[in-house]
Every structure is written in structure tokens, then in C-alpha cells.
Image (cartoon, rainbow, N blue to C red; front, top):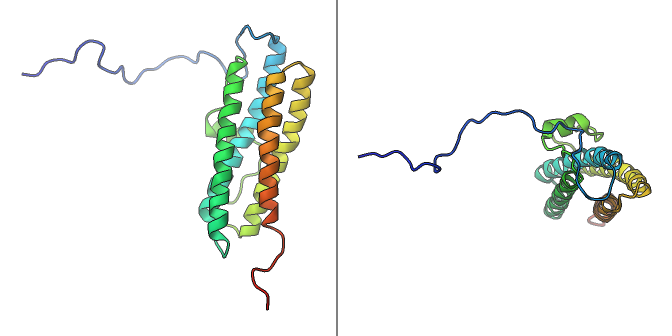
Length: 190
């Protein structure tokens, strides 16, 4: 004998609904920052977020496509850097949400917003991939520094701290590690 599942245990599947908060808006939260300050901070953070999502994706792509005599070291390094960028993605998105905004979460939306150039679909030479990562970092770092100054001037110390402590410091360290792999030092001497 088959019985119907107990009420409340059946998942309510295929739900549809209306958007409850449009992207680019902020809801009121009692955090001591005006609507305009929070809206501006969310806009700047979402731009850094979109670029950081693309940087993460670039790291993963280049991690998979790595080759050559330093394959193992670079394969591991790029994966480690990707993990660091993914952690930053989460921190930025949560900051946007804590300001009452809507974080850019769909990769297609992030791709529309990013200023990080799209790489070719295929594989590139190792120095080109590393250079591409360095250029993406520079794009993000320049914008992050500007955003940090501006939100600090508006009194948003939380966003300033996040941008400086996570985006800038992590990015600068990752740039250093990547750039050292582009120094022309032969692996062997004749």
C-alpha cells in the first residue's frame, strides 16, 4: 500500500516569482550610512566584483592550460591564486549585500560588466597567459584604489577596509609572484 508523503515533506518544485529587489538598488538598513553612500559603494563594489570574477575564471583557465618545464609549480600557484580570488569574490558580494544592495552573481551579468578583456577561447603560450593575468590584476588594482579612496571619503570605512585589506593587498602579492615567473632566467646554462 502506497501512502502520500506527509504534509510539509514534499518539496515545492518549479516555483516562479517576481524579482524582489532590482539590481542597482539598495534597501534601507540601519548601519549609519546614507542611502546615497551605500548605493555608490555597491556600484563600485559590484564593478570590482565583476572584474574579480573574471580574474578568478582566468586563473582557473590558465591553471588548466599550463604547460612547459615549470608546469607543476605554475599549475599549483595559479590554483592557489584562484582560490584567493574566489574568497575575495565572496567577501565583496557579502559586503554589497550588507550595504542593502544586490551583488552581481550571474557570470553572464559579470561578463557584461567587466573591464577585464576576454581571452581567446584556445590555449596561449605560458608567458602570454601570465601577462594576461598581470594585466587583469592591474585593471582591478587601479579601480580598487580609486574606489577605496572614494568610499573612505564618504565615510564607508567597512568597504574601504575590505578593498584595501583584501583586494589590493592580495592582488599586489599575486602580481609579485606572477611577475617573477616572467623574469628571463634560463632553467639551464650551457
